[in-house]
Amino acid sequence: MSEKKSLLDMLPKGQLFILGVVVSFFTITSLGFFFLLFRFVL
Image 1 (tube, rainbow, N blue to C red):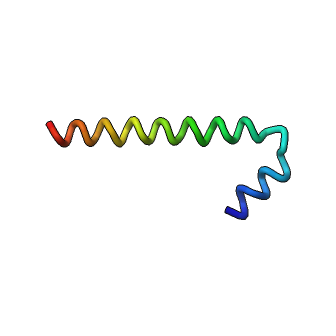
Image 2 (image 1 turned 180 degrees about the vertical axis):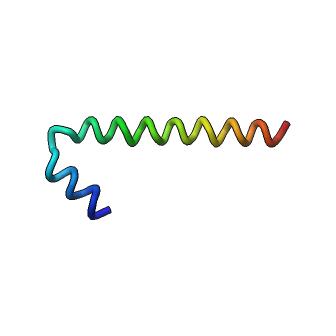
Image 3 (image 1 turned 30 degrees about the vertical axis):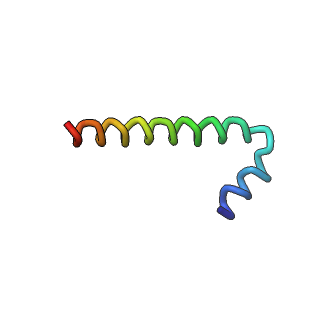
């Protein structure tokens, strides 16, 4: 938490970039989770 806040404070211009990376990581993780769940069910 504190490290992310410091990064946002130090890189205000890169906030969108960091947000994009977080969203991309969350999306990939979600897709992987649903893929494993779907594969486990079948």
